[in-house]
Length: 423
Figure 1 (cartoon, rainbow, N blue to C red):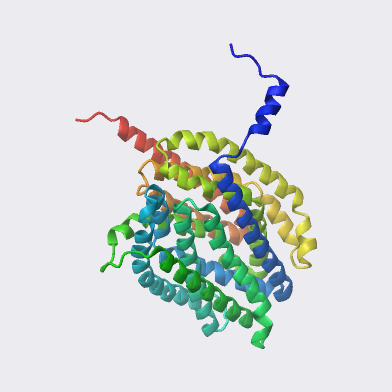
Figure 2 (figure 1 turned 135 degrees about the vertical axis):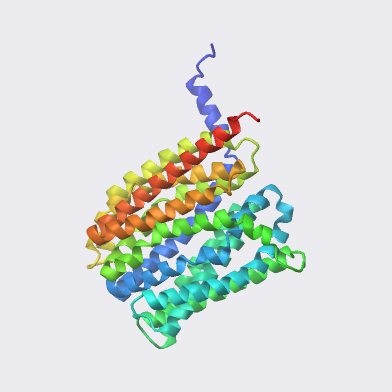
């Protein structure tokens, strides 16, 4: 029987402890994500107070709809770069080069389809030309910046990943400062400033990344890479549907409802930052690990406890939102209190996805994503029309539970297949 260590021994161990590479990477990433969240939160508050609930809701609905087509532009190539680059960091430059050759074509198709849908589905609060700029900038900047950030993550540079993502948020905050210089006020002028600054940032960091990594110049398109990216693309699209589909649906009832839902979700994202940092620093290590099961079990419990702590904090802080944002956002506090426990379910879903990817079953995830996306759309359409904001929250929980159930069924099918004797 091992002796129980004395208090002096425990204190000595505590003083001698130094954070491991995972803790250091998580801390560095958390710092950048906090800066990103601060920029996003400040921009949200400034826009919500400047535009008012109705105009802000119209802007959010347009951004949400554009977000559905961002994964289509990326083709899931970000996930392939992260998975394969984490295993062979020296190949990251060539992976990026192959991804970019596919990306530009997919971007044009995504923009054309997305703009067509927007012109048909959204109220004409934003003129067609400004809407075209907004969709082009949102789809291009979001997909390209994520791809370049995943390059840094694949090279185990968590701080580089965070800095790349944070730069876009800071650029958009700068757009708010430049907005009056356009000489116009209102929603259309803001859309033009937002689009211009987003594209300028994305193109600038892409140029620097290409010069630094010097990918091999080859001809032709790597369609095999696009095929490997399919489950990651469907996963990103499913997550967009789960998080953003409610906004155009709510906008059809009233733009102010969209604003309230969006602000509550932003508050959840802000409070979940430590959890996000720990997860993002974990994925490349899981994919490179020879024992992903053990690492997921060991870290998952800690992350779940943190997710529950996040939920309790959000419930207590919810009444502060209307005081911060002003009149017109009274429903935001109630919506936030209802959403507070969603990060715990999202964590379980993310851990399940990582397990399937790390064990070589990424392609099988496509079915899980499709089921989740369909469940999200159906429950949102049914519940939002009847219950408004409460229905949108309920649909978010139902969708996460359907995802987790679909993962469980898939894992059971994989285990059953592995145990089946060869004939």
